[in-house]
Image (cartoon, rainbow, N blue to C red; front, side, top):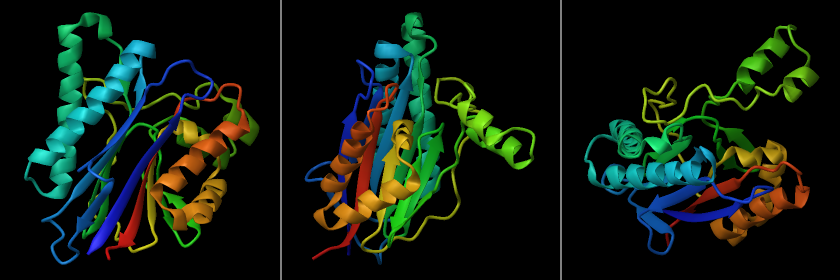
Amino acid sequence: MIRYECAVAATRGARDYQEDSAAFWPGGDGALSVLASQPTDDIGFAVLADGMGGHTGGALASRIVCETFLKSAAINGLPVRDRLLASLEAANAALAAKVNENPMMAGMGSTMIGASFSGEGVSWVSVGDSPLYFFRRGDVVQLNEDHSLAPELDRLVAEGKLSAEDARRDSRRHMLRSAVTGDDIDLIDLPFTPIALEPGDFVVLSSDGIVTLDAREIGRIIQGYASDGATAVATALIRAVDAVREPHQDNATVLVVKVAAAA
């Protein structure tokens, strides 16, 4: 059997409100045991959303997205990839219904990462710029696509059309090309093949406030606290973000999943 241990930690950063939400299912003691020989029989889900629309709209949007995604994922019996997409669509429809009910909420939206964990490994669906990290034996990579303008600006740098400094300072860098708003979603990252997992691996769903830390620092922190479990890693990552004391620090939230062999 494979055991997935889950934990969430967050900071408001320099803001006076929190627009991030994160949750996992089943809840219970923060752990899910999965039979590796029966990958579709036992499955758990994690979701993280970074809201847009200010204190009221952003917080509400991220909460609706997380709650609706998990409710849908928990009850529909579709194959995993279809299940993830259907749960994203349910979350998007729930936002549309809320705006229709209260037009004052028009303009709210959210990024979203929804991930499934089973004997096959981790699969995900994501919209926006919230990164999904994978850690194995000291190395960290981002699994999902970045739907902000940052990749486009970096492409211009690679083509020699823009300096690296100008790209880094460009005010459009964090503008989203896709988000969950209740309207049609422009870009969706939904890979066909799960990433196989093994004991000792970590998967980290994050809001973009985590990018105050570079990938190398994220890997160093995970490796340093790995033996202490998911809660220790999540707490250490957020503590490191706060320690930078970035004057414009955005909300930062991490949902950490540790892979361990069940006893």
